[in-house]
Each structure stands twice: as C-alpha cells, then as structure tokens.
Amino acid sequence: MAEPYQSLYRRFRPQKFSEVRGQDHVTRALRNSARDATVHHAYLFSGPRGTGKTSTARILAKALNCTDGSDGEPCGVCDSCVAVTAGTSLDVHELDAASNNGVEAMRDLVARAALGTPGRWKVYIVDEVHMLSAAASNALLKTLEEPPGHVVFVLATTDPQKVLPTIRSRTQHFEFRLLGGELLSGLLRDVSSTAGLELPDQAIDLAVRRGHGSARDALSVLDQVAAAGSVEEETEALDQLVEGIVERDAALVLSAVAEAHSKGRDPQRLATDLLEQLRNGFLATMAPELVGLPDEARQHLAEQARRLGTAALVRAMEVVGAALVDIRDALDPRVCLEVALVRLARPEADSSPEALVERIERLERRLAGEAPPAAPVARPAAPTRAAEPPAPEAPVDQAGSGEAPPSGDRPAAGARAALGAVRKQSGESRPPGGPSPRPGRPPAPPKAPPAPTSAPPSAAAPAGGGQLPGRDELVQAWGDAVLASLKGRAKALYRVGRFVEVEDGTAVFALPNEPHRKFSEEVRPDVEAALSSHFGVRVPLRLVVEDGPGSGSGEVTPDDHVDIADLTDAPVDGPATPEERLREAFPGASWEAEA
Ligand SMILES: [Zn+2]
Image (spheres, rainbow, N blue to C red):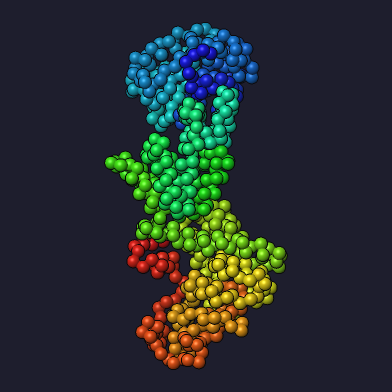
C-alpha cells in the first residue's frame, strides 16, 4: 500500500477471531454465535484500552456478512469482508462517543439502524459508550428496547460501571483482559518480524513494559522505537539505577541520572519508569504471574529484587513514589529525583524507620547470605542429618525472600517476617540452661546448621570439623548473636567480659575482677550451652580475671564495675522483641511498633 505511514497497530489489526490475542473467551463465543446465527442484538465489550474491543466488533460485523466464511470466521477476501476492513462497508457504522457524544449523533445512528437492508446484518459500534450524554444514552436505550431485526449493537467501553444499568442489562457483556507479558511479547515479535523491523530484544521488552498489557500501547511504543532506532540506553539507565540502589552505589545512581538527562530524558519519566521497574521487581518475587513481562526480563528483575531485599524494595518504591509527587511541583525536578535516589543508595544517611528496617534486613541477609558456601561441605553428611532442621537450605531461602520456602518465616514477606526469623534462630540457639544440644552429631556437618545465624565463623572455620572456633570467630559470634541470646543474669554478668584466647581446647573468657568471675562461674554452663548451640561443637569456657589468670587484682575500673546486688533483679530477661532490638541497635531513633 502506497499510503502515508500507518501505525503498526493499524497495519496489524486482527482481521479474524483467531488473530485476536488473549481474548479467547470472547472470540470463541462470538464465533460460535456467528456460525450458528445466534447473535444477540446488543453486546457490551468492556476492558482496558488497546485490548481489541473495536477490532473484535469489526470482525463480528465481517463474520456476520461474509459470503464465504467458515466455522464462524470471516474469509477476509469477499467484497463484504474487504469493505469492512477498508472501513467503507455500509453495514458497519461506528460512533466514537468520546468525540461525539451528543444526542444528534445518536439519533442519526438510530435512524439508520431502522432502515435495515434486508438479509444483511447491520452492525453499530459505539466506542466509549459510557461517555454518551444522558439524552444520547436514552435514545440508545429506546432502540435497544425494541431492536430492529438484523441489527447488532456493539457497545465498547473502558468503564462499564458508568454505562446506564438499563443499557447494560440489555446487552451480553464480554470483558476483555489485559494481555500477559508473554502474550504481548509474542505479538510484538510477530509484528516486528512480519514488518521486517529487526528490533533488538530490549526494544520488545521496553514495549511490553510500557504497553502495560495493552496491545495498542505496546505497538505504539514499538513504532517509536522503530522510528528512533534504538532503545538500549533507556533500559540501561533503569537497570543502572536499580543496580546502584542494590549495590549502595550513589555514584552509579547519579551518573545514570546524568546520562539519562544528557540524552534528553525527562526526570519525571525516568522516575515513573524506575517506579515501574521496582514494582515489577517486587511482583516478580511475590506474584510472578502478575508481571506483564517476558520471562527473561522478569527473572532478571526478580534476581535484582532478591539482592535488594524486600524491606529495601518496599522503601525504594515509597521513596521514588514520594519523589514523583514532589517532582511535579519542583523547580528542578532532576535535583528532586537525585535526592531521592541518594537516600536510597545511602540508607545510612537516612534515619527513617523504613531505612533502619532496611539496614537491619541487609545485615541479616549478609549473615545468612554468606552461609551457602559452607553448604556443600555439609551435603555429604546430609542423610545422617535428615531429621535436622533444614539448615543448609535455610540461607538460600533467607536470601531468596520470595521463593516460598517451606521453612522459615520469610515468605510472609516484609521486614517484620525477617526480624521474626532471626529472633527464632537465636531462640533456637538458646536452650535455657540446657545441655549441649544435639549430642550425638558427627563433628564435621554440624558446622553447617548454625551457619544461618552467623556465617563468618563457619566460613572461616577449619574444614576438619570438631574443632573449637578460633578467638576471632568467638568474638564475632559473641557480638553478633550469642550474647544477645543469653538469659538475664548470664547476660548481665558476661556482657562486660571478653574472649582472650583459645587454649588447650578451652575458650578463655576474661572478666573484670575475681568476685565477678566467681558469680559468672555459676551460670557458666548456660553460656557454654549457648556457645555450643551456636557453633555446633562443645565450647568449654575457662573464666579468668582480666589481665591474665594470675594477676587477678580485683581492680575494678568504673566502666567495668558491676554492682552485684543489682544482678539478681536484672530486668533483662526473655527474648527481646524486634522493636526492643531495634531500639537497642539504634538508640534515639523513633520507632513505631506495628504489632
Ligand atoms: Zn468474507
């Protein structure tokens, strides 16, 4: 056709029921009606824009008047079909109520409907029917109440709730759906190859993303991309932004904005796209079926989202969403966007509760995430530990955040669940005063189970197994988990001590003075149990007075001083709640408990 440029959407409009994508539930019924001549007088096609409502209405018109159709499908080549396709058929009348909603136009349409051509079907398509004026709606309703023979009204609308109920009730209602990511990208690939466009995958992905399930919108993006030549920078900028947030790289984030800016990208558009990207990432981990993207792109987003973590992701969406609102009124929208992005890339500079939750989650994930390397070591022994908690898998699940693992609290999503999970773990490693746990276990594999609680020790641990952790491991685990897991008295007494060394199969723990050491001796089994539970090997403790075993001078520095009389009443008891732990970790931060 030697016509001026025709959009892809118009050029590749479906011409048969079988070519309409994603609306099988509608086209099947219509095809059967056309075949069996059981057509209704009025249909209501509702659904988002660009999902094929008008195209389907035209196909129905063709099918009804086709002289050579088969099985309800129009032939596409007879005079009638060609005329409908060309828009010159006298049997099809269209009225776009969005541009012409007055009663005059409707009366005109209705008058023509009355003058039916015998033996032929007249199809009246009213687009955006909900926009008809009240008078026009009533005129339409009158006709629908006593429809002339061989007349079919197809009323299309994006908003069926706004259509008069009296009109609605006289129609057969079909709902058109948004196209899923795979369906849409399949359509775009077909169109792109039929049109000889040879577009890169990123172009398809971009069009799918921007299309939001609408074939028309996606194809019009494809049009723009084909005209512009390339899209790679666009998706790259978004990818870079998310990557910068994931990697805590403020420089990367700012350079991505700068680059997008230099390419003439509007900050508001960039923020909108970023929000969409983050949202898709969130959905990709939580409800992949809701992501309107091709599988590969979705997996990439899911992977980024997992690395970012749920709390960070939610916060990022909130911050970017808020920035979008601000950008509208901002004198310099770019600065507005940059500030938001830097807040995301540098959460340590942000003291909001959301940022704190995110930081905690990140710490937890670091602990959990470093564990997997230890898992292969443990695997060979797995059969003997079949009844054990699924520890080696746990770190993977923890890091995975969305894969619905059978164990752990994580799939419930969100930072609260993450906090709960950790509390549970430290709870497990805290048999109150109990004996050394899991006594009969072989020495080597036990390295793995405690890994989720504290990865660094396990990573640094000798592969031989059964060995006592080194001093550094002890110190680290102590600060990270073990001390916090102790009960009140033990916790209060041992808080002021420190690991000095590991000597002769015993961990040497120093306390400020002899009386303190003596009291500490009474709860030593509790502490040993906690350590043993944490490391999976027995950790005998030898308590010494600071500055070595011999020099116990009883000297008490003001800082170290513990009033023994207070100890029995020490209020520190029971497991700390997540909120308490938050407050302890970030003194002074305002924190609203959301229990
Ligand atoms: Zn035909």
